[in-house]
Image (tube, rainbow, N blue to C red; front, side, top):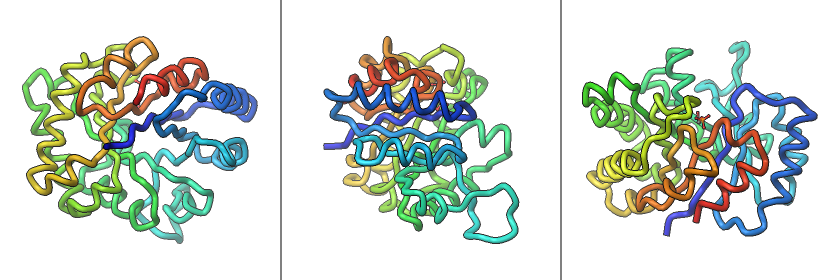
Amino acid sequence: MRQALVAGNWKMNGSLENNEALLKGLLEQLDDVTAKVAVCPSFVYLSQARDLLAGSQVGFGGQDLSTEASGAFTGEISAEMLNDFGCEYVIVGHSERRDNHGETNELVAQKTQVALNAGLTPLFCVGEHLEDRESEQTEAVIAAQLDAAIETCGIDAFENIVIAYEPVWAIGTGKTATSEQAQEVHAFIRNRLAGHDQNVAKQTTILYGGSVKAANAEELFSMPDVDGGLVGGASLDAAEFAAICKAAK
Ligand code: PGA
């Protein structure tokens, strides 16, 4: 059985006051939740999240990491620093990093390996742009993103990697992929892993991300290869995020 996971990607949002209200509100509403739950705040709020989440069922992680271990890399955060703070997860290869910071498939694969080396669980993001989908390149784009990580990290590493399929056209747009569209790509990803190792493919958690909300979570998460969600905007509202967590089984 794969463990369901719902992770909140707070992106560049939050303040000490809002985060406290959000996390306290969330912790009050998770009684019936069986899925794993995590939040990825901005780096500066990791210590606040650690304190507020101590002893709770909610894990936390970073939104990015450096490939370097330490040294003269102004503005960067290393895997060991995230580990030091008690992070369990780190998002790698989010489309906003790929698009706005020129992260290539190879760099994202390297970051995934560096995260694994530090004992972090990478939330490894893949996804196509609208023009890829319209020109029937979705599978080719995702295959290239996935293959780079398989080549760098090896197929066995996927026992410790969570994949997040996030169609770029669905992120922050309110346009969710239909559950059939999500399932189709999730099955493609799982089959591609199975081409290397069937057992690893069966065990790998694959999340859907892109305008997940309480109103569509149950339908998306009911698909056989969708094991939970990576949630942006809706993770900033405690009641909404808790309802999404409840929908993941
Ligand atoms: P969204 O973002 O839920 O706001 O669409 C998802 C993500 O970017 O991880």
